[in-house]
Amino acid sequence: MAHLCKVYSRAFSTSAALKTVIKNVTVIGGGLMGSGIAQVAAATGHNVTMVDETDEILSRSTAAIERSLGRIAKKKFADSEKAQSSYVSDAMSRIQISINPVAAAKKSDLVIEAIVENLEIKQKFFTTMDAAAPSHTIFASNTSSLSIGEIASATKRRDRFGGLHFFNPVPMMKLVEVVKTPETSTDTFQQLVNFGKALGKTTVECKDTPGFIVNRLLVPYMMEAVRMLERGDATAKDIDTAMKLGAGHPMGPFELADYVGLDTTRFIINGWAAKFPDNPLSNPVSCLTN
Ligand SMILES: CCCCCCCCCCCCCC(=O)CC(=O)SCCNC(=O)CCNC(=O)[C@H](O)C(C)(C)COP(=O)(O)OP(=O)(O)OC[C@H]1O[C@@H](n2cnc3c(N)ncnc32)[C@H](O)[C@@H]1OP(=O)(O)O
Ligand SMILES: NC(=O)C1=CN([C@@H]2O[C@H](COP(=O)(O)OP(=O)(O)OC[C@H]3O[C@@H](n4cnc5c(N)ncnc54)[C@H](O)[C@@H]3O)[C@@H](O)[C@H]2O)C=CC1
Image 1 (cartoon, protein in one colour):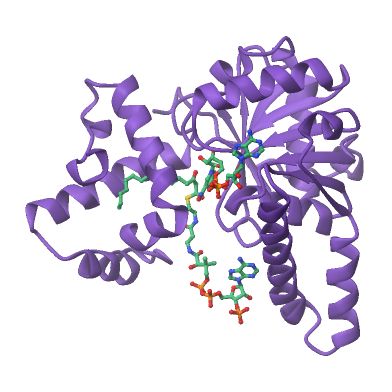
Image 2 (cartoon, helix red, strand yellow; image 1 turned 180 degrees about the horizontal axis):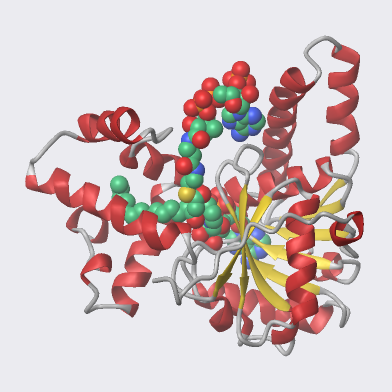
C-alpha cells in the first residue's frame, strides 16, 4: 500500500509558500460538498461562483451556507453578535450564484467540480468547460472514487488538472487530499496544495489511485459493516455504537453512509464493483446493488 500513496502533511514555514495565485474560484455543484467548498473558499477571502442546474437548487445551497456560517460565527465570535453578523455577511458577499458554468469558467483561476459521482457526466462536463475556460485555469474534481486521470482525459489540459478531495462536512473536516496524475504539472500541483492551505485545510498528497487515501481504507470498512449486518452478527445500531465507543469514530458506518448520502454511496460501490470485479474488497453488497 505504501507505494500507492505518499503522504505528506506539508507545513509551509514561509508565507511565500502560502501565497496562491488562485483568487477566483468556480464551484460546480451546490450540493452537500460543493456548497461546503464554496463556503470555505468564500470565508477565506476567495471570490466564488457557485454553479448548479437550477436557481431553486442554488437558493437551497445558499441558505445552507448561511446557516453553516452562522453556526461557525456563534463559536468564533461568541461575545459579539455584530462580529458574527459581519463574518457571515462578508463571506456571503463573496459568493455569486449561476446556472451558467461556461460564463463562470471564463473568469476562473480554478474550477472545482462536485457534481454527481458519475464518470461520463463528469467527463462531458469538463469537455465543455475545457473549451470555455482560459488557458491558465486549473481544473479539479472532488470525486470520492473515480480516477482523476480518466476524468482529465476528457480535456486538453491534463497538466492543469488534479484532484481536490474534501471531506463532509467541508466546514468542519480539516483534511483535503490533493491528488496528482502523472500528467499534473508540478506548478499545478503546488497551486492546488497552496489553495488547500489557503482554505485552512491540512493537505495530504496522493497518487491517482482508487479512493486516494481515506476512501481506499474507509470503503472496505463500511462495506464490511454491511456484510456484518447481512450475516446477522449485530444490528446496524449496535455496529454504529460499537465503532463510536470502541474505535472513537464520531459516526458509525451506517450513520456515516446516511450522512454521505446513499445515492453517492451506491455510485461508489457499483463503480468499484464494476471496475474491480475480482477484488473481494469491492465485492458488491446485496442491499445496495439491487
Ligand atoms: C454502511 C453502508 C454501506 C457503505 C458501503 C460503502 C460506503 C462508501 C462511502 C464512502 C464515503 C465517500 C465520502 C467521501 O468521499 C469522503 C468523506 O467525506 S467520508 C466522511 C468524512 N466525515 C466524517 O466522517 C464525519 C464524521 N462526523 C463528524 O465529524 C461529526 O459528527 C460532525 C462534525 C459531522 C457533527 O459534529 P457532532 O459533534 O457529531 O454534532 P453536532 O451536529 O452537534 O455538531 C457540533 C458542532 O459542530 C459544528 N458543526 C457541525 N456541523 C456543522 C456544519 N455543517 N457547519 C458548521 N458547523 C457545524 C457546530 O458548531 C456544532 O455545534 P452547534 O451548537 O450544533 O452549532
Ligand atoms: N457526500 C459526501 O460525503 C462526499 C462526496 N464527495 C464527492 O463530491 C461529489 C458531489 O457529491 P455530493 O455533494 O454529495 O452530491 P450532491 O448530490 O449533494 O450534489 C451534487 C450537485 O451537483 C449538481 N449537478 C449535477 N450535475 C450537474 C451539472 N452538470 N452542472 C451543475 N450542477 C450539477 C446537482 O444538482 C447537485 O446539487 C461527488 O463526486 C462525490 O463523490 C466527496 C467527498 C464527500
